[in-house]
View 1 (cartoon, rainbow, N blue to C red):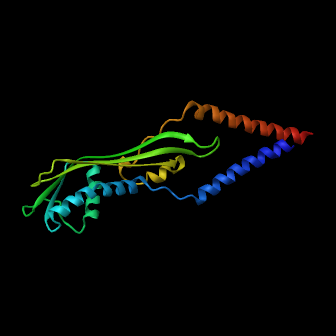
View 2 (tube, one colour):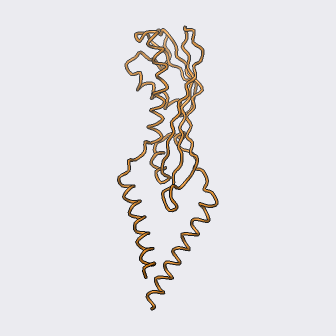
View 3 (cartoon, rainbow, N blue to C red):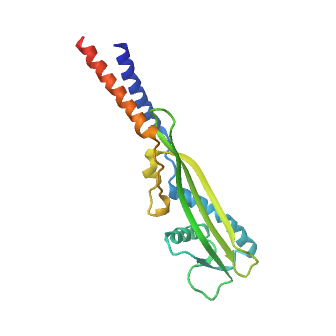
Amino acid sequence: MKIYWFCILSVLFISCNGNTQDIYSELPKTNLNLFQGITSEGLNELEDVITIIGKDKIFKITVDDTTERKDFFVNELKQKFHNLKFVYVVSDSVDYEIRFSNLKFITGYTNLRTKKILGDEYIDRELTAMFSFSVSGKDLNFRKVNKVFKDEVKIDKIEYIESGNYAFIKSVLPEKTFLKKIIIPAVIVAVSAIATILFFTIRSK
């Protein structure tokens, strides 16, 4: 009888403890928010160049990309440099042209793991923002920018962190190992079966 109630109380404790932690834990930042952050950080290098050239100048912006990456990147440019004279359409009255190329925004998930036997599953998240730029009329070769963000997130938060309309903010989850797919579920089923047998055995006495 003592063994039975010990099993029941253990299951209830694990369940309640997990729910309490989930309620009070902060939600992770979404992939879109993080890409916005590291892209803005990467554009700081361009901001330094513009400061040297002169913020009163008119800059023609050219982005060598035809995918959704361009839409995202141009939006970030407009937000970060909203107070500067950036021109995004053809114009003859410009002082310099800033050309961007090699846009890459990559989402990756690795190292699927469980911190406890019956605990929450986590993965490592790695987001990478890369691009190159040059400024016409200046002795500037293409400067390469590469910004990376890493952290860990719970598997059950994947749908939340991937919210947004851009395809690059989503990625494939790593496959579970044989131990996680077969052995652990089998052990859980076996323990549940034993608990059920003990319950009916005790009641019949």
